[in-house]
Image 1: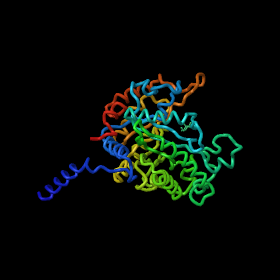
Image 2: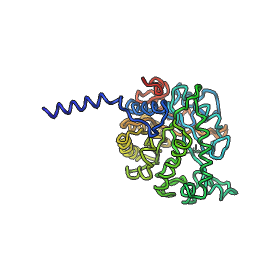
Image 3: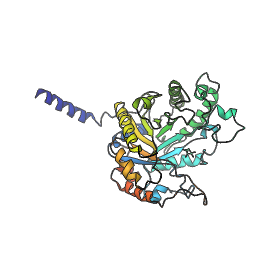
Image 4: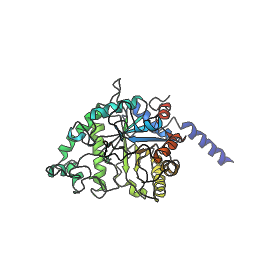
Length: 378
Ligand code: BMA
């Protein structure tokens, strides 16, 4: 009897303190809005799964820059809760990204989505700082790009003491300048989730697992956070650690830079066949468990349907992610295809199932995210 009273007391105390003692971002100087976003996401992951879409506001299969347009809105009448943006080539000081999107437009759409009450996430397929110079005469993809895995020296070459450190600093300067410009109408920095050096467990980017040591990968992360947060005083970023498909926690954590620089443990996993359900189930199991034990957020930050499957959204994705406290799932961009070369199609059976996914009480789109008032908790 004595034990159960103590137990009840413990439960009561933890219930009482929950909500008051919510975790905070890794950045001890995070802005008020960034802390609020972090804590809202922390709570929201138990309420439902937000839907995110990459480049949703910039273009769709059949359009390019149309005010307030979105393929997801065309289908459902609502925007995704999470809008993804890509900054590849910002490091070069270019006006347009590697996907030909203007950085000015990206900045504007980030502001618009934030104003609507949505969440912003940013990825960065930065060029290869080593081979880009060596092979400047060769323009054939993937030479010099993020996908150029011809050298294992790249990460070491940009860290302090490496021959490309100064050049890499100038890349980070460009990034910092863009980030510093992300402000709302009142001049308040817009909080966002930044997911650089993604899919480390794969070896298809120059920062991939077979391309650098885990120690150097972790050092690259810490160097980047140190630059943006401590040197540039940018305090509106939530940092997302990310891997591609993994089968164990040990594999997932290789290269993890530390709880003091990371806010989210995220996973990318595309459906490549019938084994996907089990693989995703397994990976989300250990990733979300680890995230909770470290007081971090979680996301399935890139995923996509199995070719030819018509009810993937509700028969594969939703049942698996619903089992775990995941903040959001994001599907990748609808690559704009000029007429004639068009492959993407919004009038497919998969689109019908996407509507079912949208109608599920478990999925959260912009209207529901807005209702949750994530930037202004009482
Ligand atoms: C990739 C592809 C590329 C694109 C890159 C960055 O996965 O979609 O075509 O350039 O993302 O958005």
